[in-house]
Each structure stands twice: as C-alpha cells, then as structure tokens.
Image (cartoon, rainbow, N blue to C red; front, top):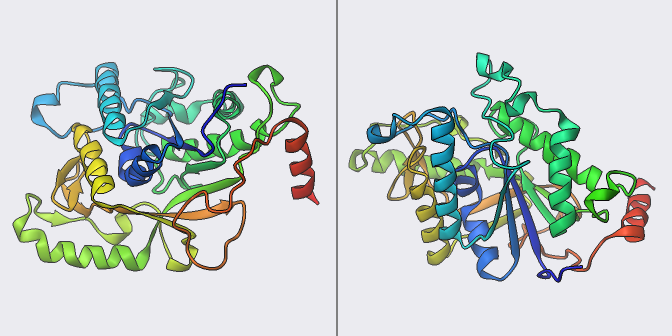
Length: 310
C-alpha cells in the first residue's frame, strides 16, 4: 500500500472556481502543512456566464476546456497537486441553473445515475483514504442542480466506500471519519456586508449582493470549525480566485460574479460538522483535531460500522 501523509483531506465541488471561493484558505493551509489535499470537481462548468468581454466567445466545450486551465492555475496558487475531474474530463456536463432546459440533458450531471457517479468517487476515496471530507449541504448551498448533485454523490460515496461488499475491485473499504459542510455564520456575514456597503463608493461595483444571496449562511451556533487565513493563505486564496477570470472579478476585500454584485471575500472559512465527533464545546481551528490518523480498512471499517450502528 502506498505511503500517504498522516492527514488527508478530500473536497468535492461542482464546478471550477467553487473550491477557491469556499475553501481556498483551507486548501492552502493544509497543502502548506504537508497534508494530502485532494479536490474532485464534478463538471467543467461549460454553461457558466463569462465576465470578461474578451472571453465571451467561449461557450460549451471550449469554455469547459478554458475553465480547466483556470482550475489548474488556481491549484498551483493554492499548492494543491492532487485535483481530479469526477469520472474523467467531460464525463459529466454542467447542468445549468435550476429549472432550465439544460437540466434535461442526459449528459449533464443532474441526470447522472447516483450510484454510478458515486462509484467514481468511491475509487478516489479508497485510493487516497481521507479522514476528512468537505462538501455542500443538501441544497448545494444555494440550489444549483450541480451543487445539489455534488452533495448527493459525496454523501453516497462515503457510505459506499466504507462497505466491504461494494465494488471490491476499487480497493479496500475506507470509512471517512469526519464530514463537514461549507457554511458561513450569519453574524459574520452581516458584519461583512455592513463594511462592504460603507466601502462601496470606492469599489468598481455599483451594488452589493444581499446576505441571503450567499450560500450556506446559518445561525452561528451551527459552526463547528473555522480556518483562519493568515497573510499568505489569504493571498493564495485571492490569487486562486483571480485566475478563475471567466467567473470571478476580485477587488480588494470583495469580489463579484457575473451578476456584478459585490460580496465580501472571506479569508476565514467556516464549517458545520455533520458526521463524526460532535465537539459541542469550542469551535475547532483544525478540521483534523481529534481525528485518528491511522488507516481504517478491511475489518477495521466493518467493526467501526458495527459500532456506529449500535
């Protein structure tokens, strides 16, 4: 069995750029600390709206190919060397926004067979054996079909990967110890928007987004962990977002998507714990705090599953 770093983090995202916006600081931190950071991106974002006029000729497959180069560049900024496309490049197409005809494309991610798509992720889980998984909530943060499907695939795959009876050809079973969903505490978001409104006259954006436009905003008491960005991590996140130029326009401590509405650029990232130890006390500052570093394979996985069931 290949020797792996003692800490291993898996992130599952829908499109290129989602990882940098949500987890850029987190990825930069753990990559710099020597953890194995594995990113799985489910589509190439072929239906994304392009911001720069000089790139608006890019559509469909051409846009997807371009966004893949943006993703590669973003991972270099964050120091992440293990980034993959679910099922291989082009396996699942962008599904577009909810309610559009694009959702019916049989090749789109929204139409993917759940167990088939999860099987691709099971192979990754059993290969890299992460202790920690980060993904979206069951609404995908804000209701985009690909984000919802990424959540479903990630949560299904973590169960399948732990089952010795499922696809033994994909490797030994592995049980992920802890699962987090991307979140933002409401008090932090509201305070950031107040500062942003005050700064707006000096920014290149005319209007601000609303607090409820941001994905994953929840009551403060649901936050189990936060990862703070020092100067180097914050700079890495901003640089990674900047190279996703088709989708993101950063400016100082804020950015805008294709709607042109300013929103804060958060350099502390927050998480809700949904699987694993409760940690009802202080908010963690390390996603791995208290997580066992050793392998959970074979009989150990089965025994752990029996303990959980009982």
